[in-house]
Length: 150
Image 1 (cartoon, one colour):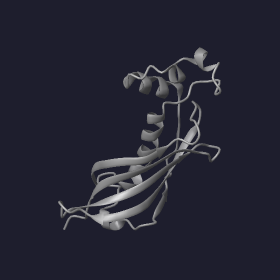
Image 2: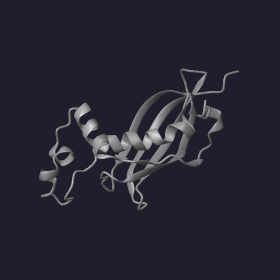
Image 3: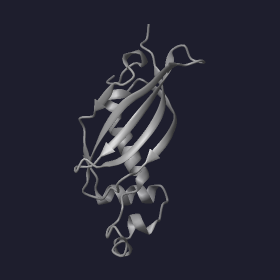
């Protein structure tokens, strides 16, 4: 178990996640196809030459999943029950193949669960950055977290 129990978190606690990942063209094509997203902006390089970006954009839902996924080992691995919701998701800068993404997580709020005495609800702010330190994704996530077993 690498994650933190609910009572090990504190409001304001920040994690600069060690693992980074470079996004490949295969990642973007596979994810777009697996999620049945045929948008030309993601999968058609010729089409994209005529856009303001000049090349395919990485699917933003892949970016969101990657940013949160990079956080799991140091925050919720083995200690989360479920995601409860995600809000305030934004993509301030685009992600392209070849970009290397890193993630930061900040604990924004903690509260006891009203229905589960063995768990609490943590609110995390996840931020993803590319190799130029541009914020490419931000999301607030609520997770039901286990308390340390007694």
